[in-house]
Amino acid sequence: VHHVRQGVEWLYAFDIHCNAFFPMFMILYVAQFFLLPLVLGKSLFALIVSNTLYALGISWYFYVTHLGYRALPFLSGTEVFLVPVVIVLCVYALNFAGYPFGLGWNASRIIAHLYFD
Image 1 (cartoon, rainbow, N blue to C red):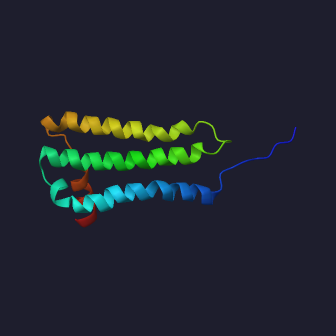
Image 2 (image 1 turned 120 degrees about the vertical axis):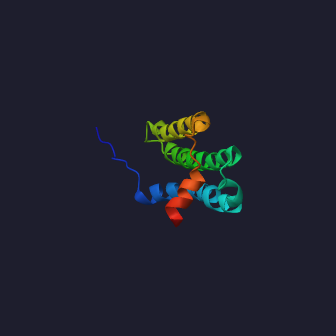
Image 3 (image 1 turned 30 degrees about the vertical axis):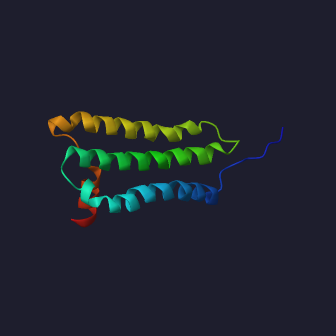
């Protein structure tokens, strides 16, 4: 029995990455830029907006990556690309549960500290 070995070309994988990164870039860099005065605050509302932007952007990246690899008929088990979405949503929920106890992390403040301090 003859069969053709099939694999994912690196240009296709790079195209999937670019298609997934662009919406994440628009959310985490462009939208966040216009919301900086709001998301860098220390209030609960700033925490909600900031972490929602990051959860949405990161989840969107992995979902679009999943869709890109799912389009290939010879790949199986592409649902594994959705596992980080579950992890992001769990961290997102735990972040709000910990806020009354001082454990709420504002993602925008953390990233701004990493970039500019």
